[in-house]
Image (cartoon, rainbow, N blue to C red; front, side):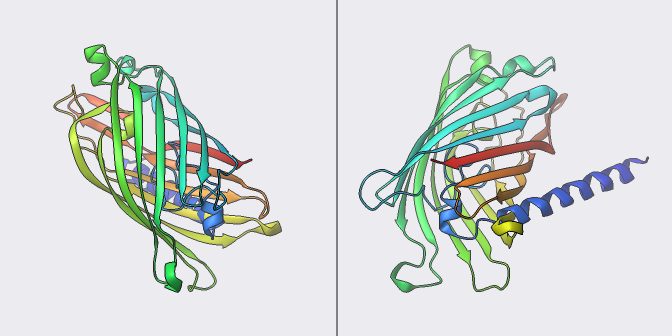
Length: 299
């Protein structure tokens, strides 16, 4: 098979998976559906980007927690990553939670630059609810932060010290139900971050502003299930601290979410992660078209 044929076949597979992902996303056609779905770092969201919706909770007090597990096959260089999360909502406007990253080392000669794992703490506040004041065009708008500690990847390994990095973000999300028969979910935001690849690549030299966004289509599935298909984009800091020649591309994902039962707060996600390939001469992270899986359940 020629290189061009192989490339075309790979692209077709990616598009097929993207289609499946978008359909799965469509299953969560309401705020309640998304408010029980944890992203990679534990916040309510897609795979790697947060949504403006928050975890379900009463107007007074704290809601029952949501637990989640995510897995990414990072390839022979980065290794495998397992994320275990718990998140809770409060006062119908707030969410907060904790995620532990567990890492299995890859088999490459440079895999030792990635160590056991790190901690992630996050919180989000919904500033403006969706459709506030009966304005059907108005998106939900929220602000939040993500703090990662005990990060010892890339530059941290080279300096033999734990590091800390963080994101502060603002995000707007809107579920458009006027488009029949397939609702559409749109989300966009900006974050200030000094994390490379959400901490998996260690730290960036400085805080920079990076944009992110997502689009998803919601479909009705069999037996009252929902299928959502979507895609995300998340700009990354271009440089990695300790690796001055590294050049990190924008992260893309193609994802599918399945909500098996309308009355159960269970969500199952499948996705393809496009993280990074050749980042500098003779260094290929081999983290393109990597398989990802997630499951979250509201207690």
